[in-house]
Amino acid sequence: MRQHTALVIGGGIGGLTAALALDRRGWSVTVLERAAALEPVGAGVGLAPNAQRALDTLGAGDGLRALAPAQTAAELRLPGGRRLARLDQAAAVRRYGGPVVVAHRAEVVALLAGRLPQGAVRTAAAATLADPGDARPDGRPARVRVQGAAGDEEFTADLVVAADGIHSAVRRALFPQHPAPRYAGFTAWRLVAPAPDRPFAAHETWGPGGVWGTQPLHDGRVYAYATAAVPPGGRAPDGERAELLRRFGSWHHPIPDLLAAVDPAAVLRNDVYTAAAAPPAFHRGRVALLGDAVHPMTPNLGQGGCQAIEDAVVLAHLAAPEADLAAALTVYTRQRLPRTMDVVRRAGRIGRLTTWRSRPARALRAMDGIADWRPPTGTYASGTRGTTSAAQPKEHE
Image 1 (cartoon, rainbow, N blue to C red):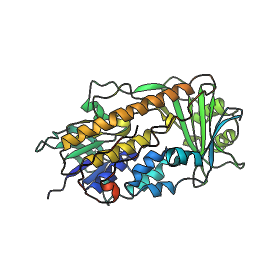
Image 2: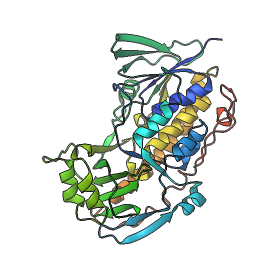
Image 3: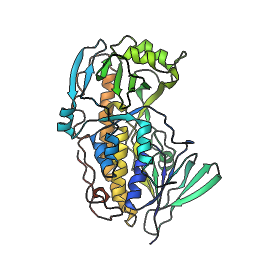
Image 4: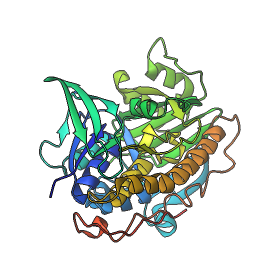
């Protein structure tokens, strides 16, 4: 029997999860990553129970949970330090089935990439969609052009998964009339710093027009993030650490200590974008879009990576190598589009709250119907690679 081939464009968390899920399903998978290496770049990422359960179907959930720091609670605070709310892990377990795991993004990437077959990831491979193909039985394959160290190459594939990020070139090629993601009204800073000398509780702090969050990592370092309502495209003339000091340097412990300890070059700044409108579909031809490439969202619910992981597992569940691919991709759009766009809207509402110059009034229970999602069952999720069960996943809204 001919082995069916899949190309994944993008080697981030969503793309690697898709590659691993499709490999478990029986596809021959190649990941095409533009960067020269899967280097330890970036900052932290939070993966909620819905993403952990999806990774459990691939045998990677326990590996992720091993990256969780030892902590019992998180707090919502004001800049002066006053505590507004406290959420302990026991409450999260009761409500959602587990806590959010905060880990360094590079460790999550390594966890996923390490479970792929040798040679499945090609770096320094800039991919361009040449033809989405025709997903009907006996339809033409998709074609992808790759520019790399060996020169220009062209590949054909039975399935292409586009996980090429917020400014996805594949999305623009498939739906050129669809509006590009819009600026959400605020910018985000992220950093990883040494732990301060004095103890602290994990927290998110809401102040006038801005937010700061501090989360410990399992290796003793600290991941911190901040947002502020500023015009897009800005850069601080004296560096981003100096900008954070101006905005957050007088806030409660451990914020000043973290800013004093961080390497100025390690502070990342990125404008935040969100989907301007629901796309016509999550697929066209033999191409499926997932993650930020099709539903970019603000980080306020911590669901960007989680929803990409959900996409990947559902797509692989539906797209058995011998299945009717056109029908499978239609169901993929039908199931994933409404759920992810609901998360986009809900994250956007919380994002707007954080830009107001008032105290936080709500945001608790915001994860209901999101973090309690469960992945498809009855397929490779139960440990049988290459199963062609016709069972379809149920979305838990």
